[in-house]
Amino acid sequence: MLTIIINFHEASFGVIGQSCQPIGLIGGNITRQLRLFLFFSLLLFSQGCRSKADLLPPVSPVPSPRMTILDQREYAVQQELRLVNEGPGRPDKQNIWVALIRDFPPYQSVRSIEVSPKDYQLVVDEYGNHYAEFDFSKQPAGTTRTVKIDTRVIVNELAYDLSNCEGDSPTGFTQPELHIESANPQIVALSTRLSEGKSTACQKVRTFYDYIGDNLVYTYNGNNWGAQAALGPMGADCTEYADLLVALSRAQGIPARYFEGVRYLENGADEIANIEHAWSDVAIPGLGWVSLDPTLGRIAARRDTYFAHHTPDHIILTMGTNPSTLRGSSYWTHLYWPGNSTKIQVNAEWKIELIK
Image (cartoon, rainbow, N blue to C red):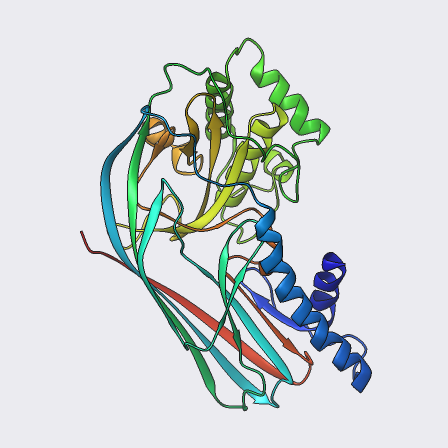
C-alpha cells in the first residue's frame, strides 16, 4: 500500500528533489473527492515512514579493540533551502522533507541541531534516517519560504585492523534492492569470479574495491543508475561506485550498506568528488562495520587511504539507496499539488565550517 501511494504521488503531483524535476498534474483538474483522498494518503504516508523504523536492528557496530579512533573533527554544517513560488497560483498542498544529520556511531555524533522554522514534524524512515517535514501549503505567488538547518557534529577518523578476518559479523543488509542488484546474474558472475582463491571476507572486499578503482570510469551524471549500470559504457559517479561495491559484497553474502552525505572540502573544491557524496561500509567478521570509499579510492595513490579507513571529512545524512521518504531523491524531496497550479523552484546550498 505504501508503494502505491508513493508511485501515485510521483505520477500526479509537482515533485522536486535533488534528482527530480517538477511535473504537472496528469489529467488536468481533479475532483473534490480525489483531493481529499490524496490529502489523507499523504498523512498516512508520513505516519508509515515513522512506524517502519521500529523494525530495524541496531546499527551500532560489533565492539572491537581492532578499531582505533585516530582523530576527531567538529564541524558547523548549515543547509539552506529556499522555496520560491514563481506563480501564477498557490499550491493547495505543499510539503518538503529534509534529511537531518544524526548520531551514527562510531562514525559521528551530533552536539546540537537547530531547525528553522521550528514548526515541523520529525519523520523517521525504514532505515532510521531522520527528516524534518515542513508544510508550506497555500504559499502565495511571488513569495519565498526558507528552511535553515544548523548542525554541530563531531566526526571520528577511524582505522581498522584487518589482520584477523574471523569471528561474528553484523547481520542483515545482504539482500538485493533498488540500485543494489546483488542477485543480477551479471553481478553474481563478476562477484564469484573476483572471489576465486579468496578465503576471507576481507580479501574478497579488497578485490571488489580494487576492481572498481581499476575498471570504472568516473563521469558525473547527477543520478543513481545502480550497480549493474556501472558495468556498462555509461560511466559512473560516486553513487554507482558505492552501489557496485555494496552489490558485489552482498552477492557473496557479505553485509554491506550505502550512505549519502556531505564532505568537508579543505580548499573549497576537490577534483575527485563533490561536496554531496556517496560511499559505503561492509561488515567484517570479528570487527564490525568498516568504512570504504571506492570513489575517492579510484586513484591508485589514494587507494589505501579510503579502504578500511573512515576519513573525518565524511558526514553521513542518510543510509540506503532509496529511502521511502525521499521518493528517489537525495537529501531532500519536495511535493506540491495540483502540479499545474503554479511553479515552485527550490534552491539548496551547503556551508561546512571546520571548528576544530
